[in-house]
Image (cartoon, rainbow, N blue to C red; front, side):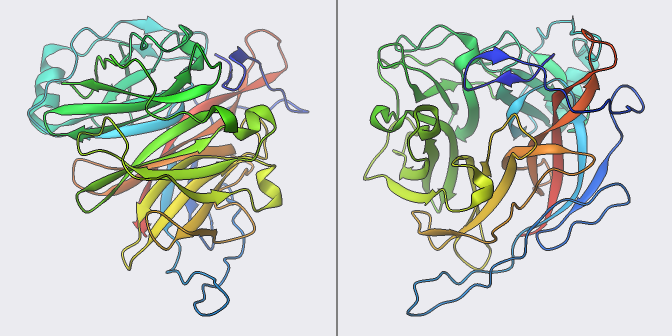
Length: 394
């Protein structure tokens, strides 16, 4: 497996200047402690910048609480899924039973079907679903787990694209799903066949793992004059839900901006006006801000996680901003990334949050880990792996 070029639909191995020694079963064992002000581990130090002091008053700056702190990050799935989004499925709902048996390449794992006993336990105690951006032959790569550590490939949760979309699985990116009423709603971006730009769609399912269906004739959100719209996420304020996304300006040499707009009560449409949340402000972002995810701060306002830089380079990283309200304004908390490349982890990004079956808050993100090349002995390529970490304080 090689990292998918999500901007061009191509795959390309990335080779560093020297071979990286691997450990264990082909992946380095890594546990990295993360905090917003200090990141210390016996193995590596995550790069975080000095936090900007919050302020309030006539200068227009934003007063903010202390930044979120993350616990140890753990590699849990090497099967090359970008932009990970995890949902916890409560007891009472059965997982899919038609999971295929698959072996993918020399560095992949065996994906065996869940037997009746495991299906019964998952239905009794709850389970998890992982969605991502494809490097598999799926519109939305999907996996299931009972413990967040051991993942089994499941069928494509979005097997068919809507009538307005280009039929190309490599152009479907960054899904996010929410439970609303008796349905689950998936938001995703894919290419509009008429416009030739990425737009955001919505699909529904009665099962959290799908199949999701989108019978719409038009996208939910599209900004062709600004390069298109990608990377949807959802944040809740009381009983209202808001869509968060970015315009894909960097795909067409235009400015990137992160946006939000309130969703209709059924989650399938937008109401009111859109709001600009955050643009490119720091040199490390290299003109790109993407993959937004918002989290309510306990003392008011919202944290906005985002990724910046070129995702296939070692300068890709996760940034953090604080927003006074769910519609902004937002300001970055530091002139350096919140999470950045270290000796044990390259390009941490695509971060989003989720709650586990016990109600504890986590983050999920991907990083690139060096893997021995099956094509060129003595070389390595970088494979995206799924990382999860507890949110210790927010």
